[in-house]
Image (cartoon, rainbow, N blue to C red; front, side, top):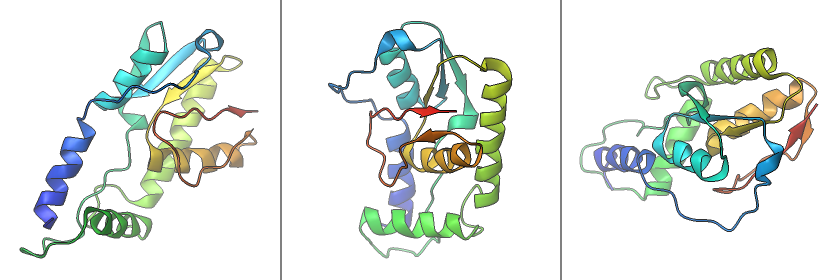
Length: 161
């Protein structure tokens, strides 16, 4: 796909419907649910949490875009994705959010959750790349849980302090 086609694909993916899974989420354990405002996250949250879902843009996926409009050059989708994530890692101007901004967003989100929902079981519905950053920041704040290399769609990861 061309860079323009990749950017269109990313937009379509962000608005895609979710697929059913057979994961057991332990519905009764959660006191509150906070979700990304992307439609697929909201759908997931509403599927696994029986109460009202708090929706925020602070849990959005790290936006990825093609690094440059390279005319009609066609590359595999995964190549565009890897180049976009590398560009984000190095805070390249082609990406909407720089790495330090993402880290600050993750820290702010954790602080907000701790301030408003301390001593409660909070279900957070977010996205793979952002979850990696969020997990790193949770570990820095003394939380324990499974590290994330390749988060699975629909999987649940538990972190405790």
